[in-house]
Amino acid sequence: MNRLLFRMAAADDDGFLITAALLDERGEIVGRRWWERSLSRKDLPVIPELGDADEATITQIGAELGAVLTGGGLAAAWEQGAERLVFDIRTGELAEIPWEFLTNPQDKSLFTRKEQPSLRARVPYRRMLDDVDVPINVLVVVGDDDSTEIDYQGEIEAIYRGLRGAPCCWHVEAVVKPSEQQLRDRFADVRPQVLHFVGHGHRTEGGAALRVMADSGEWDLDNRFVARALEGSTDLRLVVLNACRTATVTPAMRGLADGFLGEASAVVSTQGDVTSKAAIVFAERMYHELAHGKAIDAAVAAARDDVQFTPELPDSAWGLPVLHVADAPETILRHRKKWQLDDVIVKFGELAEVVSLVDRTAIRRDVHRRDSGLLLITGKNKVGKSLVLRSYLLTKLVGGAPAVYLSLRANTSTGDFIRDVIMQAKRWLEPWAGEICDDALTALSGPAPGPVMLGFRPEDAFQDIDPRYRILQDFLRKLARHAPLVLVLDNLRRVLERELLFHGLLLPAAVRELGSVRVVAAIDPSDLSDLISEDALRPRAIRIQPFRTKDAEMLARELVARFPLDPGDDDVQARWQQVRERMLAWAEQLATQEGEFLPAELQLRRDTLLQEAGLK
Image (cartoon, rainbow, N blue to C red; front, side, top):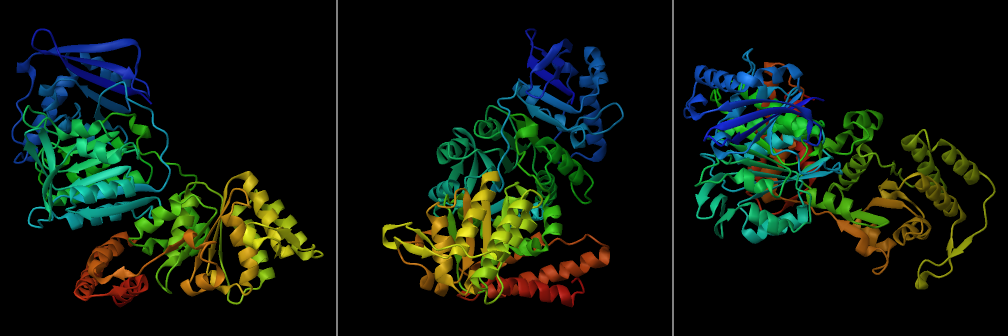
């Protein structure tokens, strides 16, 4: 990929020097060939107030900026056919110019072209980053919930809509008007790769900050707070500042974007007053592109393009977002994905319902982060244990981890259980596991081996292990020699001989007797109490609680935003809007009641409304 650099710096004669050169992927200048143009201040276009600029004015601004970069000695640089344009602006006076409105001689907006993205950066880049492991954590911070100016709920819904194509690979958590301590705690818990702020920026004695209108008192959020909150505990890749004029670089404002770049790899800020509608359109498309593996500059370009062609938005809205990167843009949010999510769902249809999973981000983080050979997901019936299991499974599969899923049948005997595990391994791990599975099935159908005496703990010394479980253990160890293996078991209560299950699989997994095998299973609380002792496995259990009724509206908004609706025609859209309104009305009514409700109630209400509208 050819990358064309435009470096803008102050010159000795009180003017400016623009240098063009080719870059490599690290942002290093390639070869000894470059092009230059000297400018005086009178060569720069006069930029009017952007908020009131009409289409003709924006077009004129773009053409004048294009003339600056195509005139003089820079003209030949464009013949290089670059696929990415990098603007390294090293003087505040030029940084204030809205280069995002730049057009080429054919009147094409360069900053809206995702196939030839443009960005601001200081080169060479600070780092070439390693790929991010999924799931990617997004922390949305709402500084002010004043609905007359900020549609924060609409923006959060837009983020959910943008990411609905990758529901298990991106986890979103929102916090509204937190106190300093609350946000510090949330940073430590979430460890976000993406920080998205919705609210207002303002000038302070120290420069500039984001205003957070917490109930306990107003406070300022800036990059120094983020640095203290992170304390090296996370790899913050992207900060999105949906706060007016956060890209401004003046002696008074100093530019929040520059400050946050010290803590993050990239910052999206604004160089004018952005309407909530424009922010919503921008956020949905940007996150959609990121979820589908696009580089950050290509994602921002696509989002600008959507804003540009959305009716009823100000003519200048598309050019107000500013992307500034410190690290190589292709690597900033590049995440490890072996399989496309749609392909996995087509192959394993039982995972399709995962798109209905809302909230539960804390539970899902816990499941992914716990370093244990055994993890039990527990909670009352219909609380959503299976969806959490499948979400975890889908994330592992997309990331390329070998994983096996088994939903147990009613009254499953020991022999049937072990046979089902082997058969499901053959289905989920083909083709490489086929021979190992066939050998295990042969051993299971042959003469029964003698009992094995194993002592995993002093109190369990000489516990007899059913010989069929010895076959299962050997089978799992062989699979795990290929790569660490995850075995996901749903409806564990359906196994008849639970004592054998406990000593033959759960306890060996818990004490790491199975090598690189992790067992994650769903089990009801009553069965958990009957099956295990207080000291043995209970610390390895995560209990899922019902939803709180006071959160019903927020959960309903997430559910309808995540629903994978085909855009269809105007009639489909109208009927879908009615479903959404009725869903939110139901949730608002539910939120007035004290108590709890189950995820199944939320999904049932949605499905009922879809059927009544003829959309399901």
